[in-house]
Image (cartoon, rainbow, N blue to C red; front, top):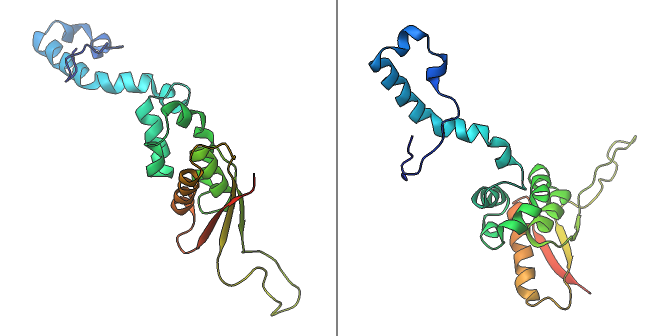
Length: 183
């Protein structure tokens, strides 16, 4: 069997193996079943290797970039595939916690390798007394402090990258402040 690019794709199993002997004698039936084999072979090859796609150690470069692009589209193009592959765990954590402080931490860590300190002003509490004061403040706010090493070649570009990641994963209605803190 040949793919559109002209390269041979092995067929792992053929539909002919399950065909009753009475049908195998007919050239029309054999040709029709082989046509189905040609159409279905890429699907079976993909399904046979599906575990390699979801395992970060073996995932193709374009697949690793695609998964990271779900989190922050601009980041996938800026990082090497090996770097992205090493941080797919953080990408998963960031996606599951999207919009939370933990999700922001995981997203920044996944995209830059830095672990920021993230604070928001919200709070949850309960009171036995009606009309008790609410925790936090009424205006939403997110503060992100990131420690960038003094020997970083371009600290301003890295800080801009952190801002971009935070803007991609924070809740849209919450303003964020991203600051570089001392070494």
